[in-house]
Image (cartoon, rainbow, N blue to C red; front, side, top):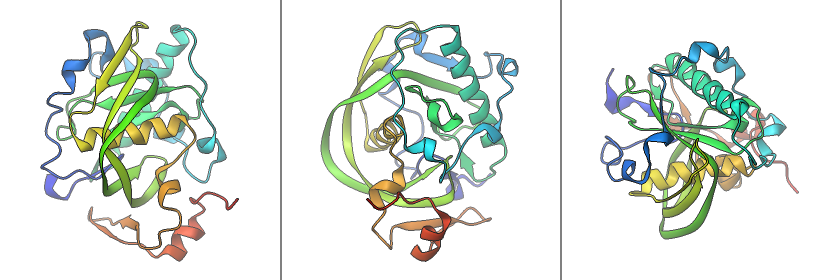
Length: 238
């Protein structure tokens, strides 16, 4: 695959931003990593068809905090991984970067984030339970974002270049981290937004020139605002 034309499911990545998550992995102990190759995701019957998309109203509901990590929580994570990988296998120009539980219609505060955005053969994901942003820092950077729950439409979204995040790993131990670069900061903000019932399009709903469509050749082209409105992905006016 020509990676220079590859688009990404959570965010469009520039080569200068991606490669491996240098500096990111050091914040996590061994229990937070899950390898889809080693996990028997065949135990999950979830597929890309379980991923809900706008205008489904569930995506704008807040997810509940997990009080206890149980077998059901671990099954939820397996289901998220299975749906994510199946989605990715169906998309020649995209890599599944991350997913929040609400995207498979489970209103629980769990997110998974890929280790390596360049290598589709690397199926290792970070798991964060009850993630929350403690502090946003740095400059505001506008860049492309997409989402598994927003079909084919991307947007130029402003985000803070640095964030501090805390959450739990799958053993219930607290994890604290700083984003090592603006791209990781963007991913974390995007996924934690999902936990709070916020989609990336909500940040740019009134910006008529901020939307793009992913073509069959894997390119992003400007998308008319009228068609964005017709798609039903924008939030209702209050």
